[in-house]
Image (cartoon, rainbow, N blue to C red; front, side, top):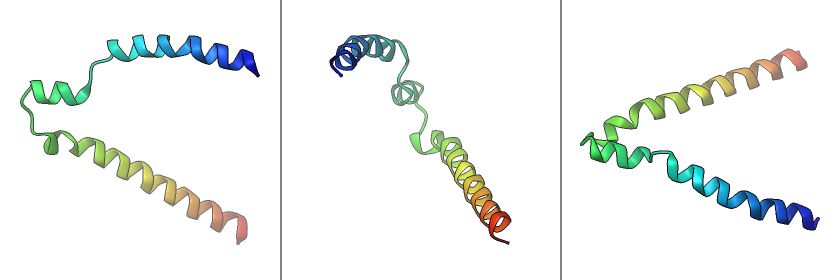
Length: 67
């Protein structure tokens, strides 16, 4: 169990370095002077579609297995 903690502690700086290299979308939106409300539209639509597909397949699988 201790080796897991050692590996986890060694992995944290690696994640931190990667996180610093990935640009922050929020800062990019503000630097381009784009309204965040307009910029979040595609993300909301994508999340809505994913949830709808999940609900659709859940209902379909329930109907398929129990009918």
